[in-house]
Length: 320
Image (cartoon, rainbow, N blue to C red; front, side, top):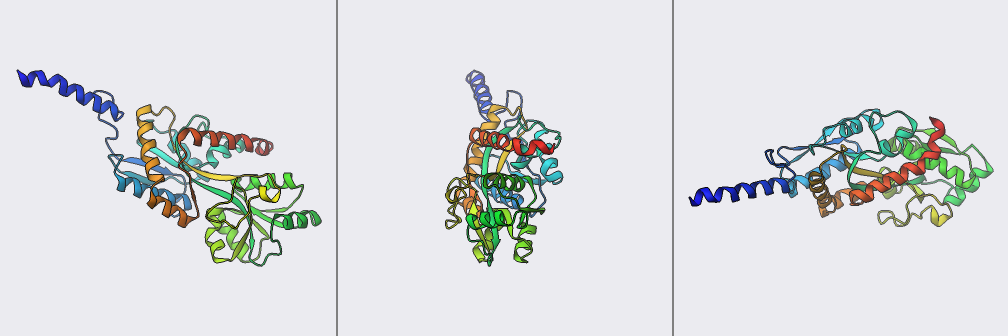
């Protein structure tokens, strides 16, 4: 009789435990299997390296209860992996670590097969401010030198950009300073760096992460960084605002999931990623890559994405 009387209490405890882990009665507690992290760029890319470092920390900490596995779904300037993530079943087994571009910029210029306004934003992982970089022996020592030269010779100074996260601040800089450059499009930071080192380009628009190694070696110099304040990783580089140009522009890597993610699962994933992002091992890995660790929660990250999309809308709308 005692055993029979104890059964309801045991069953009730089991239901409560399952509910606490996001699993409704009759279903396995979440997660019942490994979780897939989609990266929308190829293996070896900067965001892939960042994600794998974060995944290693998550697996070492063991707070999820299952392992996370990184899956590369490259193509379409990030849109293939973004689509795969946001159109997946909202069950917590598919999340993505995405650059902000496919969510904040690309939808302004082309049709996408996902709704960038309807996303479960879980966390912000890293920030990489944009900066203007020149060869080490460039005659331009700061943004004022560059602005004066551009006004003296409109359209003659080459400015390397390309992806929207570079093209937009480049155009905004021209508007704010009443200058005009000769734009040269590159696929990314590596190509821009090659052109700078070969002295085939006057100025490169790059992310701090992409320029970090060459800045440390002294092979290139930064004229200014488009962050709100100076960055500890590059403390000698003044902000654009310090030099009289009211321009802030940063790239973000965010953790997202399909819309409709259950609250309990969202909370668990957010806590797991936050713990890993703010850990010492991940901070060390990010520092080596020239990335600023964020750790902003889902609400703050979502607002930042919305604000950036709005800031870019006027510049990108004419190209539709």
